[in-house]
Image (cartoon, rainbow, N blue to C red; front, side, top):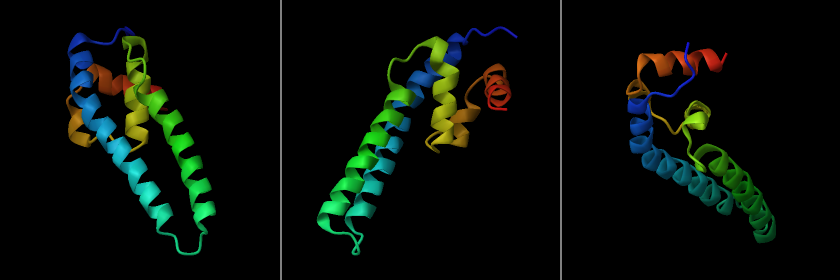
Length: 107
């Protein structure tokens, strides 16, 4: 199987990326809101937890969305899927070849 990422899937990925980024950021912001509402935490402890969350989310955001290249497309789609920010409908838009490759490379 050729490892080249198909042009039509590359274009689809570029259409999907902004929506996936929004979902990723919403999830991160929801996590911050949840931490800030924890009554058992002092403000300082909440701040530290939020800082840790942001650091982790920044690393995940960078791995998933920065430096989009065809050579990293499968990896980035798999990351989107693992973070739950790629809908089944979006995933179904990719060619069967790409979906098979995603399934094979995740095993």
